[in-house]
Amino acid sequence: MKNTITFIQIFLLTLIFTSCSKDDDTSMPADPLAAYHRITSLEAGRYEVAIYGTDEALYTGYNELMIGVRDTETDELIEVSDLNWKPVMHMNAMMHSAPASPLSPSAIEAVSTGYLIFQMPSNSEEYWELKVDFTVAGTAYSVSGSLMVASSERYAEVVSFMGNDENRYVLALKRPFEPEVATNDIGAYLYKMEDMMTFSPVTDLVIGIDPRMPGMGNHSSPNNEDLLYDSIAGFYKGKLSLTMTGYWVVNLLITDGVNVIKGEEITEDNLQSNLYLEVEL
Image 1 (tube, rainbow, N blue to C red):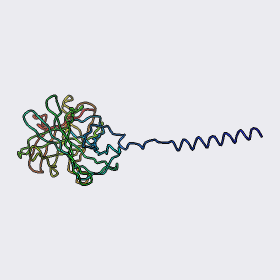
Image 2 (tube, helix red, strand yellow):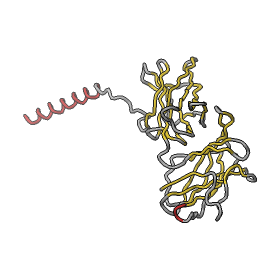
Image 3 (tube, rainbow, N blue to C red):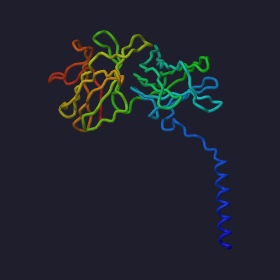
Image 4 (cartoon, helix red, strand yellow):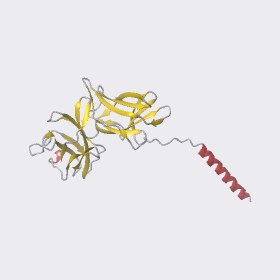
């Protein structure tokens, strides 16, 4: 009998503590952006514009980013309208912008996604600034702040060039790109500079590639495919064949199908194009 009473007492105490534990559970919901790195935040009154990325920093070339507006009074991400951004490089003698995609809804509620392509890094005297505009409940807000952009830790993944058609272009590899000794899927974005502050996507050219290993007799590789624009994906797609580890120069030849916009064919007398990207694995 004594054992039965003890068991009942323990059972009742367990129920009480379990109930109290549930009542006192004040754990916060998981942060939907916890898997991303917070790059910077910009203050606009009671609102905070937070920029997140898959990398811990911004680099020259392609940067895919997430952007959310948080109400600092409720600490919640909120839906906004008319959300857009504009990067501007402040140089000693001039200012210019960079290719930037429109912002579109992401898989995370109240968070938008897009990409920026930086042509050059920041330094002690020259810096990038990002301006963000948005509207909340009919009220327009505008905020800006400086960005630190580092040189790519890899090789040349972005190039700016003047084409034979007298237009200036920016070409960047799509990240993430982790090349292997294989035939790799490769993506790229191509933009034309309309003026110092305006870039428009180019979708009707052919980006020919000819990878070579300068340290190994400048040999090439089989099964490469030129990059053609994929209207569904929204960027150029091709195949890059790498047959061994080491440093590769990806020689480029961009054409409109007939005329050469920029680049050169590789021959016995011309070992490298005047337009190229670099890869090392």
